[in-house]
Length: 178
Image (cartoon, rainbow, N blue to C red; front, side):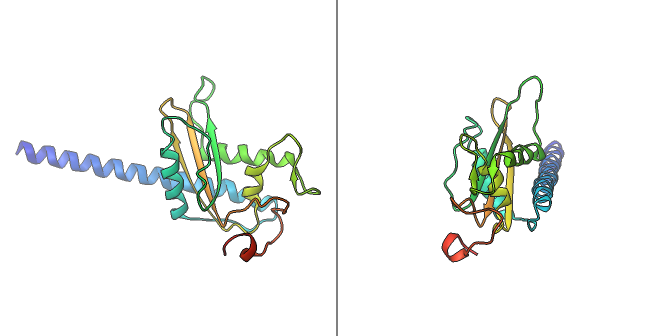
């Protein structure tokens, strides 16, 4: 009887934890997608759809940096944005929206005339989000051992081809897949 009760309690705990994680993931997925699409809508870009294959790739990559929080790109088949948020006294947790908005703030460094970032500034996160030909996004948020927040977002098809505007359509056979 004692073993049966222990088994039942253990099973219920596993089910609870699995459903809790699933619900948290769905909420985070929606927050990532909404933040991306809000920015794209403002710029006149078509919305992304959320892709679980991309999210799975992002999750695996984010978890692989649980010990170091290193902002090194995976060099995988997708476009990629990475974010790291410190767990200092002023802010202990960062949200999906925080990460996306940090990337969007790079818009001020993008020069539409030269189709590039202003010299000495970075704007590649912003241009990947705005890349017209990109259709899908998938993201993951994880916490490093030191409690910092780590975010990876994957984009398909990838963008950010040098010298091309993120706001124009590009030939997918030359600059990426369909």
